[in-house]
Image (cartoon, rainbow over all chains, first blue to last red; front, side, top):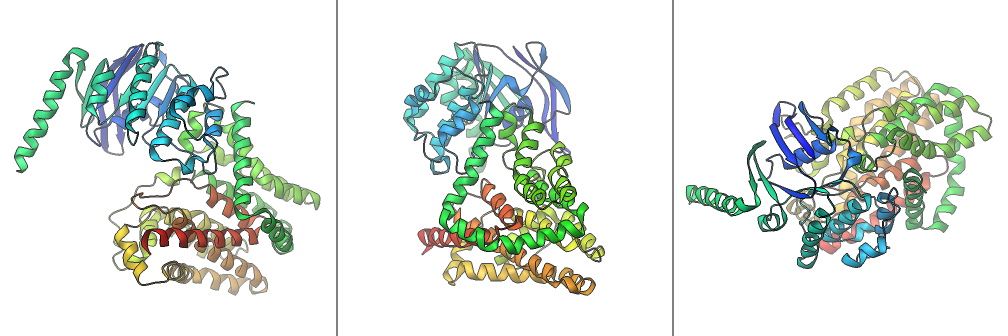
Length: 224
Length: 314
């Protein structure tokens, strides 16, 4: 279990996350939903350790979390120039002897011996995804994994995440495509202005969708 | 092979691939031609100002370390980061150390090889995270100097501070060299963002886009740096060739950053990703025997940039 307690994070005087309290259980997919700038990526960056919190704690299995526990797929992953997809996966999977690159690539059919800089946005996403699988960590954090990915691969990602969940991993995911989240998540937290507004259980997802649609309708009504 | 070995192996491959991009025959011809010229300067430096070899080593490695884009990636490898960086940077500096040892310059070689070490204890990529200062009014700088405005907004205090410090210390012989290396390190920060499509189209239609961009920026930078060259000649006129080397080095740096920027241009992408070629360029510019390789890189990326721009806007 991963537990976030009273987490506060700020950039200078700008408080980005305010008193966040969340629990992520193994074998569950936890969605994080919010508009741009709501604090989703900051939350993920803080859990991973890229950003230091001002207050609060993040505990995994009752000890302080380290980035060795986590496979983190950022919104835009970094790839070295003049590096092939195969080299990237070899590097990330260096500590996981059981990882079979060819087998995993059968799913996405990436040109692994081409330079990554020649890949499309969607192909880079898929490569980054296989990369975090190669690392074989207990917690997977995926920030906007469906951006730029084609329909077929989108479906593959969704099905794969459900399979990975059954291997007792903790999966945290953010997306702007609410249908993708409601389909695979067991719980979705709505984040607004750095605060967790509500956490919805699976049976409450229709309420979440209705709330979102209603609030957007209100905003449009205000303008038009 | 463990993660660190794999990582270093990949970096070496990247370097050899970048040489292959230039062309191996051209690389060797340039290497032979330029060895004498740059090595002369290096030997001179190692004889006159030994401690400065350590400072130059810090500046070169600092320029790589503090502008790295791959800080998050390296952290995700979950290896001993300090050890990995120490090994990677040591490999970068090793060829020059070996050359100096071959010439019997043991002390400068030690300064050069180990001087950089404190750098690895600082966080990577710090200069990349500098926020833009919107309060800085640079309206008088024309829009065509988009890069200058952006660079100044990002690093105004650092640039002003070092600029004045270098002026004040110009009576030291090594100041101009260190200051030039500092500016070379900063140049990628000036040129990392692409202007909007509309701005490019407007300038491109006037013709000679790349040439005028290079000329304008060379003019701007050399005017801004002129007091430094003047004071160097005032205090060390007998070393005029060092001043000339700095002038040429800076001009090459400006040219490279412009052509490289447009060689990696893509519409709708706000900024460049990856700075390995900039690192390779700086490396070839300061390493003995490789100056003409850096010129080769400029020519190569010039053609690539021209093709890219013509593809989108011709």
